Length: 436
Image (tube, rainbow, N blue to C red):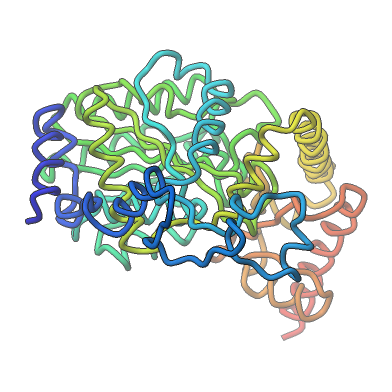
């Protein structure tokens, strides 16, 4: 094992041996090179005032070489903030600005010790980093039965972990904290579990309320007290889009200092929060018991980044930083929030009208981009195909009964027509089935 990796592992052993034990084999082996090209280039950037012949970029007239056809469309920005490589951990000013935003929007974090957010190539990359660091073959990854299908690719297919499902909703149509608790305690013989908490949930658009948030935290603490090392990943992709009486903070704040056997990891980003899906700017942030522990985890994270993408795209980081620092940012974001809330509320009022009750129910939703119909009479995939081929309407079929509808991308005035078409399609399929 590389001496740098051994040194990081020794730090983790000393600061919190449980966190060290959570690491995968890759997580234990990875490190960020101290004497490689990047570190030497960083040193040269600070000291080489005459000539800097270290990094693989081209310089012209004292600034990064660039094409006029590109710069003309980006003339607001200095070439040094676009064309150079961003550091592996991300643009320092952006990391600082995102941390400030995170603390303002999650007052529950308070004075708890958290690291500086590290920039990822959006949230999928952040989840992939966490999978590399913590998931070995056979490790349990606990997620609800209503989930984003990419978790399977990220944890099970790539890393060989075992997906463990529990029902998202209980019999009262609230978050099933008992199901989460049982799934966790079932891992006692393994002594380790990875939990992914995705609120607002994709695909259902559901976020628990404060009471259920406390029950989630209690279930995780009970597992830790039973001797299980728990890595908790809060997938906060749709953070901030809370439209009703639900949690309005990430559970990361409650989990940050919950127990020595609990490692809280927040994965979020500008992707959905700031409506910049194609920018691919996300963040991964750790909570811990000491600065040394956080530093070791961050070094390993940078090692994963260096070994995969080297660093994230610089232009999009600059664009997001510019937005966060703009005086108009909050007002413009609030304007878009109100539009999204209007679409969610209109969707709910249409569904609650009673006119569609013979065709479907729907899973509770109160946040995010999506909601899910629970079909009563037709197969979800058959309905999806019929909608697409006969009416030019796109939806997502999930299993036999569930149809995901993204109200986020439908203008409020068009929502009633959308659900009328879905209902019409159900009746058309029923008619064909009855005639056979």
